[in-house]
Image (cartoon, rainbow, N blue to C red; front, side, top):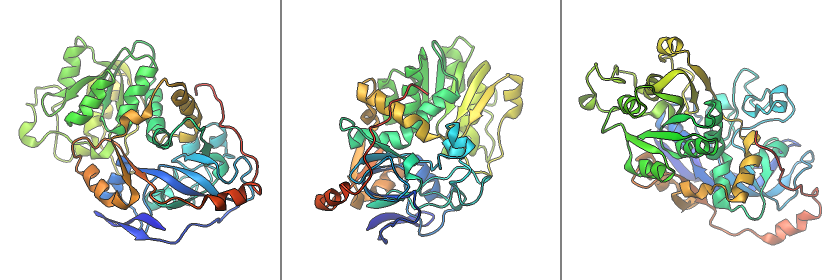
Length: 411
């Protein structure tokens, strides 16, 4: 089968690789109908997050059709259309039972203290073969696959695999509530869903901070008040627009690859938010967020930072009585609820999707996305070949009956 494979920093290829197979009784094999490129993938390709094993298939977002099931997967049947939760979870440990799937004790083969396991990541996340491929093995499939209703399209569902749940998680971690003023740093796909989620939770004002005109325009269409940090100091702008108070909530939706202004463009040291030093780039969004928050505000960090990142304005945060929450999204907790939101028409996730490319164009799509070419907000990768439906039909009668998509209340 074809798959996007990591070879080295700045070296990824569309390779022929062996088809996956059932390894454990709780596995499933899916035929991937749609996958996607995420900003997190760029961290690995650029080398800003290290530890990638050559030969790893990239990608942690997918929609597909079940082709094979292990004997312990009893809530799905062959032929079911499913969305994959990006983080891998066993469903049995105390963390999973508390809906904290991203801290599962059993999914990561590196041990309980290793942290979140997910597809297509560095060695400390597993590693597990990723989802930018024609087929994929899904461990703990009874937890990690959520059946899709017919009226949710692939284009909508691929947004529910990772970025919509992560944006929603960010707004929840920031404790957004009715009437809040919120700042979202980074207007990539996750940032866009953080904006949408903050508005769903009742935020009265949302500021969107970025430097790219197309991303800012997308945020503005959602009703956000935009700030281009290439044109003005974002902290000074937020303070001015909030009467000198700052925002109640802030969300860092960009992480380690935040881009700060070029040295010649930096404001004077007397300007709020201007205390840049060489090497500060990895935490620039965090610096701005802490400075822009009102006293007793709250900060959510959902942008990716490598374990070695050390810099953080802890003194300022402490003296402002800030509350901070952060981490990897427990996707499986949110996906059923977001399916319901999509079905109801309350939100259309496809408004964030800018490009749908065939898997054969994946490498060129990666390059365009990495260059942040104009208009490249979120990229889906679609399957190109039809599958033999007869093979699925023959296996349907032998599989367990399908369950309906779960109905839940808001998390």
